[in-house]
Image 1 (cartoon, rainbow, N blue to C red):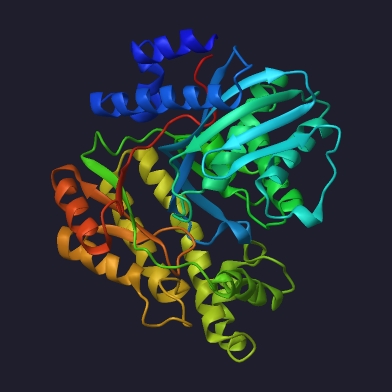
Image 2 (spheres, rainbow, N blue to C red):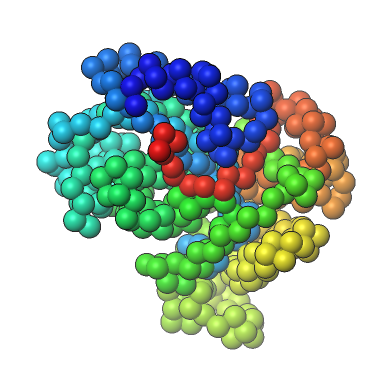
Length: 428
């Protein structure tokens, strides 16, 4: 579509139906998205003035609902795509390069004749793009070039998976245009994980990419990590009278690598006592009967984290079943048990290296003071610093947001909406 025509359509509300499906039908929300996309097209025109035919793409961030620290042990998890997303204005061409300008990060260019791994470039976003192009090429897809301008409102460092959203965006662009959508949502996720692990140099599970690519509420069983079982749900918490809120407690993630690495390392140390690599391979009842024998061979914390894994893995399944049954009270009951387990067994509310910095614990305490002792609130994502998640009754949402912003600063608390689609082309 020509740039001027696309701007006209956006401005006149002719794409509002697509926007409503992604962001909600509230007029203030639609107005913001119209302005956001118009501005993105104009920025694209400034950076790539020679390109006239353009298309719009979007990929969501995600929030973890159940299964805290289970995926790296090949367990089960429940997560959902959200309305915060990364968008791109794209023009395709035959130049043999991908030029990608990300707002806030600048321009990167990938020569498609060079799809080798470059260890000296680990950690650069260019290598995510190179890795995804390489992944599609290995499938026999002829990947051509394109120019893109992207901007994201997926909060970096919030646990909403801005990196997985970016990977889903790039994978969707290539799959839709150069592969006629043949790869499918799960394969796009696997290609994103491959790019992150091999080309970007960062180990990661498949949870984040899968949820961003599939969209909606997603239950994932990672027993077979090459072909995970994925089931999608469509439970609407808004219709049930609740809003999903994420609060950034403003804790620093610096120097926390050891805390994050210790969780899977300690869980694996327990699995190794049974001759296994991952806890999913260990019989739960054999483990529970063996705790006395494990004491002294594994650390106390490792044993407790293993107990968390086994119970949390089962809770993720039970939460998914509660959603499938439409039983919100049962869901919240399980959710609260999961929250308690993360606090007492997994122990990822704060770092033992920074015992006086307890933003997550403070946020959870304040949430319960506002919403009551039975509030459905928990640590979000990896933990140790960062964000908390709460299901807030609609009539209390404004008060909750105001008071959490008063504690952690303006703009700390976000009201999210579940997004029921993953990576998409809006102009399709």
